[in-house]
Amino acid sequence: MARRIFITVAEASGDRHAANLIRQLCALDPELIVEGLGGSEMAAAGAVVHHDTVTKADMGWRRLAQYWHFRRLRSWTRQYFRQHPPDLQICIDSWTMNWHWARLAHEMHVPVMYYIAPQIWASRHGRIRRLARYVDRVACILPFEEQVYRDSGVEATFVGHPLFDMLPPQGARDASAHFPNKPPIIGLVPGSRASVARENFPHLLDVAQRILQAFPNARFLIPTMPATHEVVHNILLEGSGAAPVTDGEMETFGPFTIGLNRFDELVPQCDLCISVSGTATLHAAGLGVPLIVVYRLNPLIWHLAGRWIVKTRTYSLVNLLNDNRQQIVPEFVPWYGSNAAVAAKSLDLLRNPQLLMDQRDRLGNLIRTLNKPGASRRAAALAMEIMLARGKTT
Image (cartoon, one colour):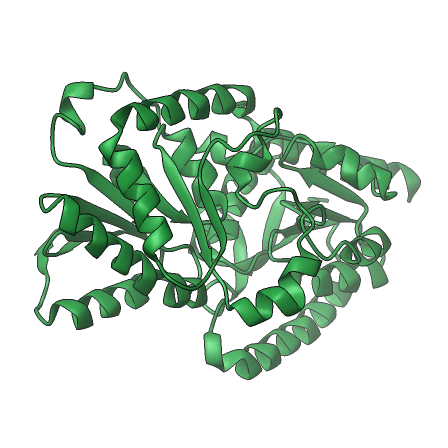
């Protein structure tokens, strides 16, 4: 009888990582049945997607509707598991959603693997108790996570970061095609969630306007995702007061160009990226682009809660992964108050191109220690190992 794996994701990035994992799973076992809750990329990889959970993510003010939506899905999943019990439940990212499915699977005696697990080392360490109760195995994506989880009593295996399975090959950088030989191109990365883009992007635009005062010929490239594209488009449309110039799937508002799902195309063209904190910072570093990392946060929320919850020595993933504990990239996290400091740091880097070159070299050294493709393949092998072990005990 064919084995069954049920996968749950809640965001576009998780959908993409799930798709890569599914391809590797099916390569290991062509008879495997993969199904779950996810999006179009999972379906394209061969999974049966029973309900779309990706387009329901980050609905902002419609949180109550989202709550009832996922509650109905949990009830549906429970009934489905009774009729078609899977051999393994795989949760991918999105702790807020996935811990409910991990608990459900555990209660129904289905083993659970968590791939791209919550960053308990950064904040809310109490989540480890739930994870330890409901999850059988964690597939870690950062080198130090394996020991952190094991120290907390969770069986964990480092498989590598899936980002390095997807990075396009990078050729030699042609310095003559970049700043300072040409006007600077700056990337503005608003994040992957609509709520984060709404909070950060207007301030990124303000920083861009300050840069334009010093570099009038500067251009700005803005890679968006499905959850953020409309937010960015509407903010630019309101600010420009004119319809954009459209070229294929690109839209240009004066010096600003936005492209949906064009990160790997737009970011390598940039001389500097100002990016919201998150995986995008590691992605840009992997493409060899210097960075400034920001994350807009209400100061009241930060002082009342954030500063007590977040326990890391630094906030940017790039800086956190640097073993010598020195900051490679400037970070403004939390970012509140005036935008002047971020603009000043941007201008400092642009007026001193050697600083950009030095950061690019340091980023390259970091990425070489992390760039070990094969995370999806190793995670798939781990999933097969869990199912094999279960088969021996049942």
